[in-house]
Length: 297
Image (cartoon, rainbow, N blue to C red; front, side):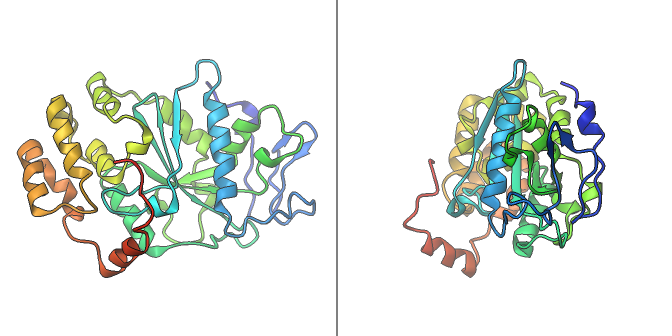
């Protein structure tokens, strides 16, 4: 499906200004410094409000005739982190059981042009995932409010909402002030993702991961950092053995590393970042969360 001309005509103006040409019938979106009650709705560390809009727009947009099969999973905060059995994103998804969607949701204060919450330690971990080929990206509102929250909603609110959200690679977002004009919209990124082909053999490997709730960090690194010829040569039994190793704990013990090497050979090196125990800070956080399950094994 082509991007509607009305969306291509959007002109992004500096933050705290009204975006031009972003109109649908009687509805016009404005920056977060507008004057209506809806415009005064503050995100203020309420990234779940933004995530709800993105989730709703993705689901309806993909549910159209001929659209891709979409599956989304929003892990709880205690399930998120940089270790093997955690999830590296706020929203985990998959298109047609093969192409992975990983979005770290960030609220942009449109008046200041900055993220109220920006974690440097988390950003370093996200950079590591990017270097490994894991398709993790930041998603943030370019304006506020989004079409998802318009009343009445315009007919094309799903595409409009996705066009009002920007996506950036971690390496393209080095600080709390994003270069909004340089980042593609989530709609543009989604259109590009839908056009990418996945080989039948690689699709078989992706399909063996039953559900997005299984797309933990260890599995993501396996799917995106291990060379395709190594990955597609695995038998069902070998793949099961690898998955068992990756889901045993937060990091790879020497025993687990040895078991992985027997199956993956030199490709085991992509898991080097996960061969050390958690730091004292991570271990303390783990103890605090001990009473909360981190999801299905």
